[in-house]
Length: 281
Image (cartoon, rainbow, N blue to C red; front, side, top):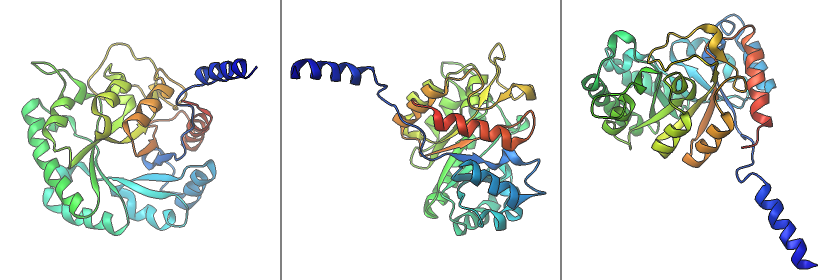
């Protein structure tokens, strides 16, 4: 009967995953290829294109060497990690770097890393936010947007509750500074990246997709064994749950990165890409 067919259809719909989809656009962070890219830039970038990557996140310091080859591919450079010094000790050089990024058509500028010697508590983070806000304003004026990329130390708890990342996100102007969430470093610090995505929502503009082996107690530094860095589908992070939360948060671009690979970085990137394309979430 029609009623029975309707009932069975409703059961089937309920059983289907609500967020079932695959990631349509997958980008790659070129840092993963730093051991092979300088010697064979065009060959390596063409290999990324053949794997299926469509977007790239580039590194400021090596961009001039890579750019002529990059523009011969279909990889679209959308984001750039600039030298941290431009946000700390050499702020006067930032406008020129932003102008160069704008001319190349990049959309996102990323402050990628705070060295241990420049880290500190709440006051240091608040002072950093002053610089980030100024940089974010310059980015907006150039039609780009600034993101801050986390490692593990930002998840260290602070007196009175919350973490250093909470301080940063509360102090930085949400109209000027977004987050590039590195899900692996979040997990190293013992924080489920899904909770970060749910907490900050649309403040998370970019996502680094990577995974990590089980490493024991939470740690707030980068002292992680090279063998602990894993392909996206090979580790303790629930990638499907992360992608579901990222989709709900409105993350705009996803970049696969693996700081260290057991062999050919292209092979590790292919493993990650193939996993993502098969994944329903």
